[in-house]
Image 1 (cartoon, each protein chain N blue to C red):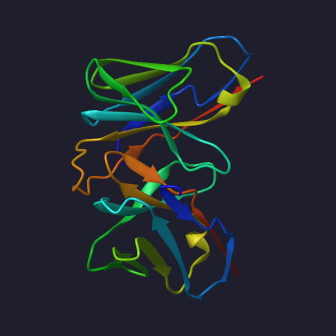
Image 2 (cartoon, each protein chain N blue to C red):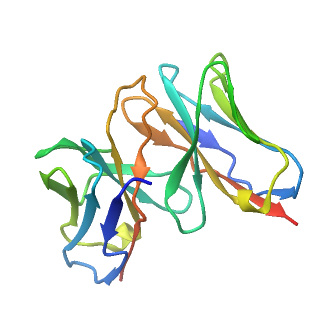
Length: 107
Length: 116
């Protein structure tokens, strides 16, 4: 089983709609979790950390389910500028990166 | 944004030649990393450094070496480039690696390397 698994998509989302996707991780000892955003041909940048109780940052909501070993990201009221690849990142002794969920927001 | 630069940004080289990529940071971060990113794969760690002259291997270190003689510079060398090393290479830095910390890694803009 891979350390971090994501459905690459693409997720085609009408502008203004809500989109959500999950990421599963294999190591139950993982302690820190993140979502990074990567625009086409650019470097990854931290979108948000994922805390045990779940957390929001504007239109973005992240959840952690330790029992089932997955984290999720929900984007509300999608904007064209949200089009990007969202990388699930799990911290163990090092960071393990998923392949990313590609989101395309359609006008 | 963290001050991380990479050079060159693009390079085309031939199989068998040595190649050195440079990462330079102005944040005084202790930890530095080299990753490669390929279609169908997540970012994969090549080597990392936890201080000047202190380096260790990542998950895909074969064919690569690194050096860190100053806090701000981390060099990645492909000793004899192969076509399988065609990739996008990202440098990253962090000021903490505690397993329970939420300190982020900051990434440089990447180097696109093509080995013909």
